[in-house]
Image (cartoon, rainbow, N blue to C red):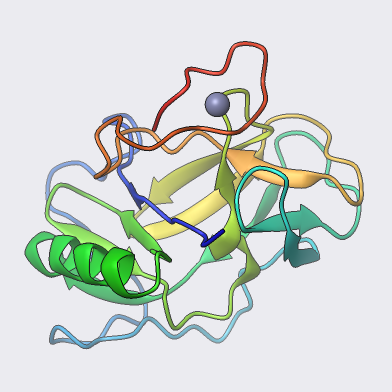
Length: 176
Ligand SMILES: [Zn+2]
């Protein structure tokens, strides 16, 4: 089964306000790729087969509640490009790694090596995705044991409820 990576939209509370800050390391132009010297990965995360969907991100060491797990970096694209790329990727590979960071821009993590780009959606997640000044960061909501899959609630996706959720939670909403 192909991994389907929806376009993730941040909640309003997470979205940058007022003048949108330019992330550190972002170059001008549409092909700009964020590069940072400091590794934003705070805890070891591995990628492996997920019971939820395709590949998933798994804690490779215990992660305490509220800790920052890491970030997903990628190429900054405007929303028109993001939607076009998401449609194309869905058609070609079924794998979409796109996170909206505001109502204008998104991060395309297709070429990223950051393991958290494989984070699956769950209706009862153990982590949360926060967009902070254009950076896509993941924080633990609960203590996460080594070997446990890391999940977040995607929020609105470009699937608009057409994709079945297989997170297995008793309170699963059924769709993405
Ligand atoms: Zn679910």
